[in-house]
Amino acid sequence: MISTNYHNPVLLAESVEGLNIIEDGIYVDATYGGGGHSREILSRLGEKGQLIAFDQDFDSKANLIDDNRLLFINENFMYLKSFLKLNNISKIDGILADFGVSSYQIDKPERGFSYRFEADLDMRMDNNSSLTASEIINKYSSEDLKKMFKNYGELNNASKITREIINNRGKNEIKTTTQLNEIIHPLIPNRISNKILSRVYQAIRIEVNNELDAIRSLLKQTVELLKIGGRISLISYHSLEDRIVKRFYKTGKFQGEIEKDIYGNYSLPYKIIGKLIVPNQTEINRNVRARSAKLRIAERV
Image (cartoon, rainbow, N blue to C red; front, side):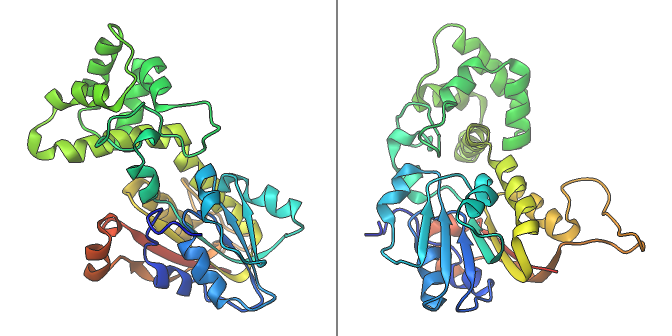
């Protein structure tokens, strides 16, 4: 049975419609979560269609849809190609991913994703991973912490936050969200405290789960896996993710010059479909966490 509070699927109709589903196609939902996007994809598939769903969070298994067209793989989408190969799948017709942290994960205090709850500093999406937020906060060097807060949190006061963490952990190990919040609060004005804390926790979560490298890995694999004419539908929630997706769609690369073929023509793997899609006010009113979502769709060429 699907948990209705696990995650409200964001941009549900738009993201699935963007896949331009064919009834007997093979599709991937790279971020299964509560199964909302998967259920919509299955509703558009025929009897011979197939959906392969990935999610590294063990808790997502409780939400599995009873449908023999669905194959669920309890792993990170970084391993997409390997697990498709294990199941004798070499090409797919489309892939969807929603990179947001689920409402379930945020609202479950013991997971440590939110500054709003007293909890151990954890933030692991994969429950079996060894790296936790606590280990990062207490073991990373000053330089690595500063780099993390600056690059992943886009924090102007990364140096100041890092310095206070280093000073405090020298006295007592920083184990909980409350301890971390108490260190950061004096450094920021009350009027923007929620915004800054959100960025601090975002930076740590990205580091714990290697999120940006996972997205880059997924994008590179889709070039090989998607059939010509196959669609990719990706939902991002902050500028770091969106920049990676936008640049790869446009250039087929994450940095550097666009590659050319032997005739001097640009070699681009994707054609962008439509414009950037964002939630309307009705959806935001229904689900406030949708407000920062950005959907980009592209087609393999």
